[in-house]
Image 1 (tube, rainbow, N blue to C red):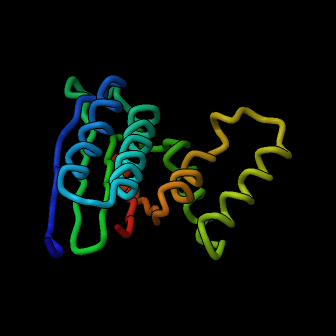
Image 2: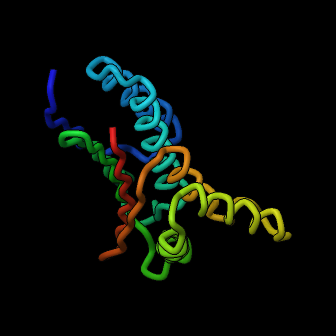
Image 3: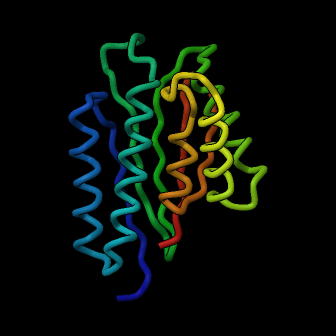
Amino acid sequence: MGEFNFSIDLPVRSEWANVDLLRTSVQNCFTAVFSDIEGCRLLAMVTGELIENAIKYGDWSRSEDQRFHLRVWGEGRSAHVSVENPVQHDDENAEQVLETLGWMRRFPSAIDAYRAKLLEVAAADRDLGNSKLGLVRIAYEGNCTLTAELARGVLRVQAELTV
């Protein structure tokens, strides 16, 4: 069939039920087009995990329209997932996302970062919900590169996968 471009670009209501709906929709959509079933599953997993983070850590107190922005697109052999959600001006979780991704870049691979984070979590006596293990796990299990940026009250987390 050759290489081609694809894109999904949606404003999505910040509701937990939408995580599974979108994860399943992305997987079904791309499975119908591509023969790499495992790659489609990984793309859907990464999409779902980033959506969960947006809902969990987004600032949904600022407006009546409580939506985040999901974009899934591809060019050739690269697939991308971008999730944007509103955050408060001094949001600690958004800063931790940036710090965690910076920490991950110090390692030669996602598996190395994942192993280091597992050891860190195992040695610490703290709440796993604040470990930021999820981001490292997404990069490792999704075989993707994660980046993030924070600008004007919006956190954008983006994943790039080779399919």
